[in-house]
Image 1 (cartoon, rainbow, N blue to C red):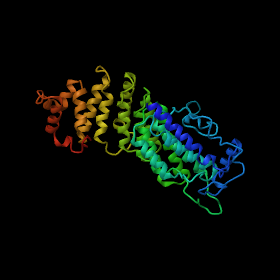
Image 2 (cartoon, rainbow, N blue to C red):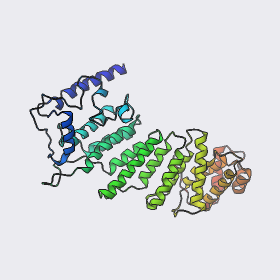
Image 3 (tube, rainbow, N blue to C red):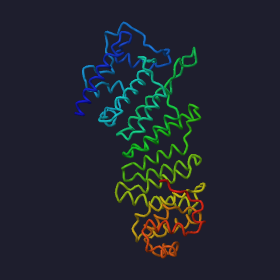
Image 4 (cartoon, rainbow, N blue to C red):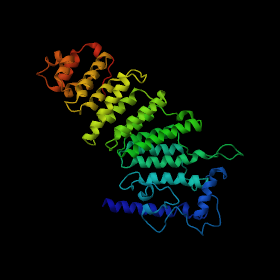
Length: 409
């Protein structure tokens, strides 16, 4: 029944589309070459208006964008004339099926494409930056499949307007040009951060941040300067990555960027990097790689003092313990860095419930455990694990937890 309703809905939409401005006598029907040439002229050589100019060729040509012969919406777009995000063979993206926003996303991308090529809206249906951002917000609020691909398709169409300049005679556009703004990039990166996929998805998120940096340096858009929030979105995309070696690429990105521009990063970036190391949904090989890289980061940051960093949050220590707990008990580094991490957290007053629980559960070494909290564990031996953690946290010196952040949830 659902399939029948979808087919009927698509058929009705197809009929409305064929009866719309594409068949209007006021719209020019161009050949494929003329259509491409008009795109090169773009907005620079034609004033923008809310209605299309009528021509005598409307009855001679069909739009190369629309395949009127098919009722299948996947056949409506020509991949050679249109960057079709729903053509898996041409673009490498997934076919968008059984997803609530397929029609809406396609419609927005088509409006952007036509505005760029024709230099004016072809119907009274206007597309603006605000409208695109509203679509992205809707996309972010619903956990739908392939939403990162959809968001990227909208962003890339909006970025086409970057190189266009207003007509010299007026110096400005008669209507808003839907260029991406800071909110657009923020929304797209947040969508990427919540999408699971291969490392290619994380690399695309990194490219989006680099495009923001290009806009800041080349176009002079000061609000486009990337900050820790944007790089944290890239780290969260790596966390959702399913490749076993994702930790290696995430660490390389952070360390290289930190040496290039230390002002971009804050401690939250290292917390999210450790979350990548500790996120072991791939396999044991991935977990061991993450553990070894976590130790390397600790050595560079804490032992060698390679970077001048502000105060580290409590979550840094908890996620570090989570990252190295998969090391075998016979590994010499396991007990050594459980000891070093817990000791430093105590010295910095950063012991919270998560760090203590992780230490109690996975320390394994009786010697290390007794060294730090043996006096408290002997008093709580009859309690359940949850009650023991709460009791030990209460008995600890206040200086051990003076600067700790309370875990959310």
